[in-house]
Image (tube, rainbow, N blue to C red; front, top):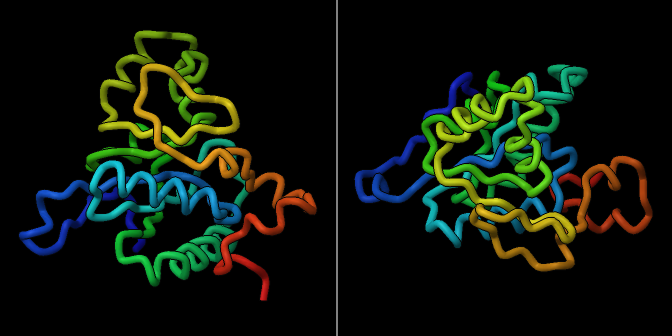
Length: 187
């Protein structure tokens, strides 16, 4: 699915009462931890669907071209193909608060949650940060390593998956090769 502004489609009337969530990220590459986080969010919140949302202009990733994003989205669509509860959305939105608009919940990792709650990203203004946070729907946070933020709803993720890192995969770390989802492995 390719939209500039996500608006969750709930489908048939009997499904309209079930929440739809979003999980923004670069998913470069999609890992076993990304999938475990998605599965945990669906189970914890009783989601009808969780959309993996890739921004065309993600903060800090402006260097990625359309071909890179198209390739990543194609891979994510393969990941979602046999998982009817998983969707793929591309957006022009950059900020988590904007990406999450229209969804019932948003899923982020602990590291991203630390950024979202850091006043530095709001010009050092805690009230601007608080106003942005007030716009968020329900938030589910996946622990990362030993980072388990307080005052937020944490997902239960197997401890072995908390250290999985797409960055380690991209840098060619030998121990990280098994972390890539089969759909994302080079053929």
